[in-house]
Length: 148
Image (cartoon, rainbow, N blue to C red; front, side):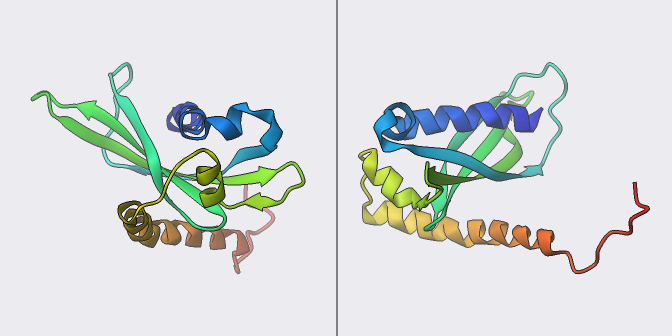
């Protein structure tokens, strides 16, 4: 359920924050999902009400990270984070060339003051660790062929 909901959240934020890129065909820039890391904190019971919040978390020259929060309400009417997730997005031209997220943000009219850059840099400390998970692909201990 979580990844399916995250698909909709990613689409919504991309169309909200990057409308020129997503809706004006002349730019030929496309956002692609590079993966999701999900951290569960509390179960969301079937048919329970919850909301999802999504925001830009950080970026470097290749990746834009989105942070998602699945929020439930406790019996005391307090909000509680049931799940954190981080989505990795890469922007590509039709030629396959990567477009840095900062360029895409600027194209869409976003400005970068000191507070934004400070938040991006602080959050990059966390996002950079998420990128280290890509080392899983170079597993030095191959799986036996008879493992199902």
